[in-house]
Length: 256
Image 1 (tube, rainbow, N blue to C red):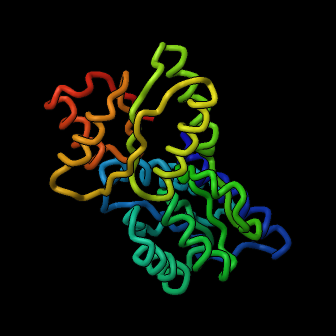
Image 2: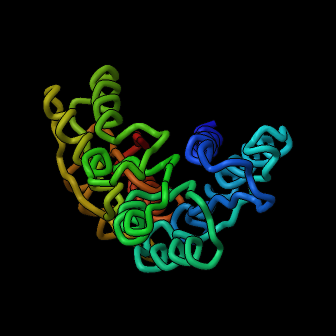
Image 3: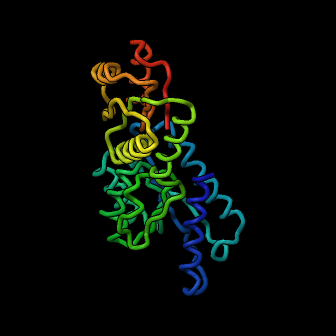
């Protein structure tokens, strides 16, 4: 639903922006879809893209968009974690593919990079369904960035409330080492401690490693009622959880 909302919001923006330009031409309107089709969330992105494309196809089939103009998608890989690759991908969408706006990006770090490096200089609208870093709420964007998912500042409040309501007075916290993970971890820590909770350790973990025994050991030594794993669970987070279970250091996990 959030993906469809992002796509429809962009289409609505294009309708308003084209109203004073006379009858629509025959060319399709292209929207870029910038998600991490490779990288730490690659298992999540196919249905995300399909949801956005479903909204586009329904608008096209209705015949109501700019006098029957079709809306089509052009996919690009953000990688989720490689800012340079994501920036190059968005540059190609704009200069080579001729897209009018972007659904994306997905991960906060690449969203910030592509917005600042390409979209803003070229005046291209971006609407993200999933970039939740609090930094995006205050960043200068020239009115070109919106999102349909709430900021992690709010998620941190909700997580803290849930942990305290369930009686977890001390927790260990690990997070994916990027803009998204750091922003989420900071929000959880500040809100949880403000409610009287104790964070035994806050530590970042990198994605793509083959072994997380050092991270698992540090978390085990710190202890806590449960382990909060903030960030991506496809790879690093999943391995830390499994390692903690194997070591018997934690039995309960919270996955925001």
